[in-house]
Length: 303
Image (cartoon, rainbow, N blue to C red):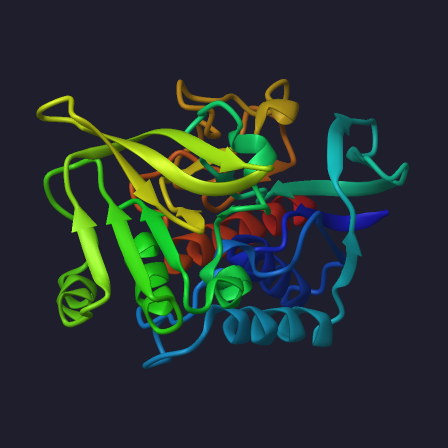
């Protein structure tokens, strides 16, 4: 029986672990993919206090080491259900394990949003990617499209511009929404083109391989075709909270409907990070949630 079980190993979950362990509690972190969350895929991060610049992977590694050195137990499994018990909670995984905890913190993060176009799912990992750090090298000397105009898309586009022959940014708005520093850096790249007010209308393949995408101008309705070897999607994120809706209310967009206190209607169950309803989703706000949720869990345990 653990004092605190944390579902999710991103900044929120890892911060919660650090605070729980420093309060003398036993902590288990269960992560389904890889520790660090979305930040682990960022090639360069410049908005974390204390670090002028650091790669997301390095930051995540430091975070995990800190939690484990304090005594956190970790499991790489996919949590499917959390059930209330007389002693606390039973946390079950897809792999068949069941862990018991007196409190639970859900820090399950979000997943990459897709465009929902025909054939898209089949192309993920075979022409469609989400991470330039992971897959950019596969497209060295080739032509790629980056779909999206926010910070994540612009950071990925900058990284791809270093290895690809050409990078075309496809933005559905008439302007980019990323930081000025990133837009200025892209303006200096001769192999980067930006298409504004443009939507992806479809994927075209030959023998199962992506060869081009159809584009639609949102202002004129004109359809054009862009030859590409790969597509990188950075069109937002979406929560995966439905499995826990009976214990923690969801808002209309599927996020946990919790305030800054990170509490839920279920005693002993807390939520933290990007999976929670909030206005700003950044590493620092996720970590803040983790600290708040852990301290709330500790108060619950100590009362």
